[in-house]
Amino acid sequence: MKLTDERRKTLCIGITGGAGSGKTEVLSYLKDKTRCRIFYSDEEARKLYDPGNKVFERIKETAGDDILDADGRLDKEKFSARLFSDAMLRDRINSIVHPAVEELILDNMALERAEGKRDFFFVEAALLIECGYEEVLDEIWYVYASEDTRRVRLRESRAYSDVKIQDIFASQLSDEEYRKHCARIIDNDGSIEAMHDSVDNILKEVADRR
Image (cartoon, rainbow, N blue to C red):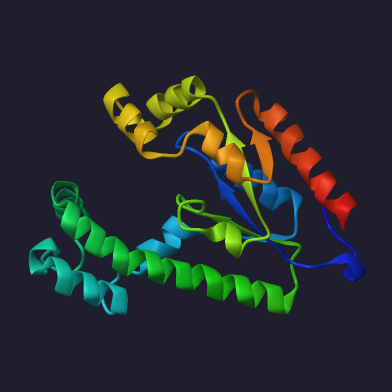
């Protein structure tokens, strides 16, 4: 979908949904169908852990040098094990990382809105609702898939055990909560073609509204 210059305004849209809902596939289709930029929060957050970054330095000061490998980089296994076993440390690290990611998102949103070159700026992040992004995004779209469908996908694509899957589900919002906070629902519980139709219908609604 491409809008005329007279109708163009960069809409900032959050894309959220539970693990295994298929957000990556939805975003891939949106990239093909729209003039957009996609901001993958997890990928951008990983860059914050590179040596020399101020966030990395604060993490090192907080957690200690024993989370580093021989090259002075973050040892992901050691770091993950520390966070898993130490809730207080996990909270302190989150208080460092989450504001930095939020700053990145807000800065990039402001840039896209100021330039106005694209129709959409899509933000993919795990905690959009929990972190209050409803206040700054134009809309949040929920990628829906049933728990049964998500379980199958997580087993097949990531080889997760049933115990790990259940732990992940327990830590995430319920379907009811997602629906309460999201403006639009992308149905990704069936075939890829059905998901495409769901996205196309939403894009048409957005275009008609503009």
